[in-house]
Image (spheres, rainbow, N blue to C red):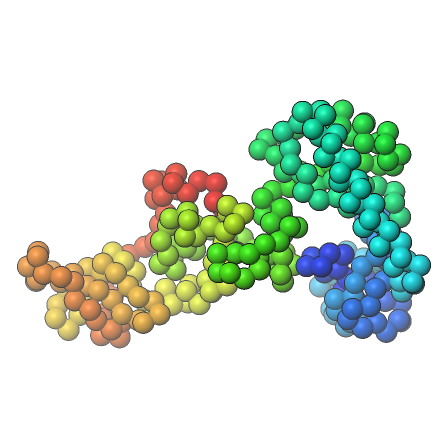
Amino acid sequence: MAEVIGVRFKEVGKVYYFDPLKNKLNTGDMVIVETARGLECGEVAMANKKIKDEDLSHPLKPLIRIATEQDLNHVAENHIKEKDARKICEQKIKNHGLEMKLVNVEYTFDNSKIIFYFTADGRVDFRALVKDLASVFRTRIELRQIGVRDEAKMLGGLGVCGRPFCCNGFMGEFQPVSIKMAKEQGLSLSPVKISGTCGRLMCCLKYEQEAYTDLLKHTPKVGAIVNTPEGKGLVVENNLIARTLKVKLDNAPADVAPKLFKVRQCKLVKDGYIKVNKKELEQLSGLE
């Protein structure tokens, strides 16, 4: 067993494990630790905890120190510098005529590097821009292209539900979301209905997927053949939550509407399947 603390470096970011070196820390404490980027100031998101050695993906790096008032003042100064650096970079981008949008600027704690996050439709040759910025700031410059999901997480905003973005509010990491999830949940496959403000599939499709996956194991799918109290028929619609099926009976006239049955009243003969067809994929290309 190893004793660890969990530290995050952004308000809603991934939590990383560090060795507390016998220090007892509480959630919310600020600490200085060494990362791949050098020294960083982060917030304790998980107090001292024992975890199994096999749950550690790599050797723990030790805590450097609990952040002092001087450290916190330095972080505040860096935030002011970031605002100034953003204005300078935006002007440089304009001067170089580059098709890119600056999203965020971040100083490392020790000021050894400045990271500029940007979005662009394709690849951008920013070598001249990097040289220009290095001559101004006299430190290492990194330009990092990010996707629209990361942009939404950094900037925040309100979703179609009227609440703050999940990615910006509480999600430490993005979860994989697919068009098939939307289809399995019986949602309209209209891009307007299933995409978030970022233009990608809504993260909340993931939240209830486990429940829908379980329900689908015990509910005949659309296209299934079932035996009902009134004869054999084809499932044309199912309601996973209400546990009901609309069945087009084989012995019913063509102009008669499908009949509604409870799932427990029906016996499965041959199940259907859920598949996103080629046409649907073309219409929803770019959402995943």
